[in-house]
Length: 342
Ligand code: ADP
Ligand code: MG
Image (cartoon, rainbow, N blue to C red; front, side, top):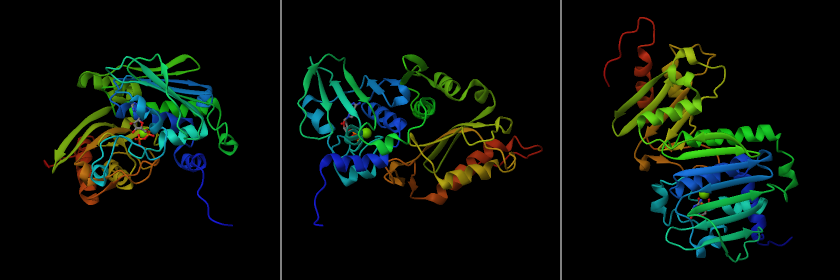
């Protein structure tokens, strides 16, 4: 066989295989786009576990009429322009892959209006990337993305969808994880028209704490200690659960690096070590932690869907996390002497 270039829709479907695993992946990508657009409120409507409908509406900066078609084509992004930008990227997205991937495996409509414009515009994608002509639409400032019939044209993928309830559970998990990263943004989520989540935007720290209570439960808040440490350009803050709030599963462990949810072996190890003396080894700690550091010291360009990050100074980060957490937990050990100041 001779070599040929694959048609764009197939290229996008292959890419979709990597990032769009299930309805919750669509929700993640769309909500992250809303946050990148500066939204103050993000509304998510889901029907039939997301396989019939996922609708994400925001009040962010919108998309210019002449960019609507481009937004649906591969490797088109407004978020980075150079390698230098990539190294200090502060937005959730930057690959320009989500919208083309989603539109290649579902029926996608994009409606948007920018501030100062009289009109909203809408494009309906059929997955072919062949220049959709924007049509005038009625829409407030911001953007709505409507995704219907996910995987209608990729039966192999569709077969892997679980029950409505399971798929919706994953979606709820995504909204909670994202809501913990942005206290200042309001989120709502409904399933088959029934409201499920309603988080108001927080104006101050006390309200931020309310977000923690809303997502993790008031019980967690009551049985957690506040953490806030800074040293050598690193800051760690958040809430760590007391041993009395330990769990059988690792289902309440949220760790954010510069606002981005991250999973990292090094971090896991530092946390486990810090809890070693206060927690039975079969129990799992609960925590919501935020690490802030110079973006140049962490690489987020590891994988489009996985939560990996790479720290330039891994050892330094590990030791900082360990000692910060150890100090927060030190008073909890029976008969423990206070740790020396860092
Ligand atoms: P990326 O987020 O990696 O740039 P996407 O495919 O997710 O790629 O989106 C492509 C582009 O479409 C974005 O760079 C952005 O300019 C625009 N866009 C997508 N969603 C929104 C939104 N909700 N509000 C404003 N612009 C958006
Ligand atoms: Mg994106």
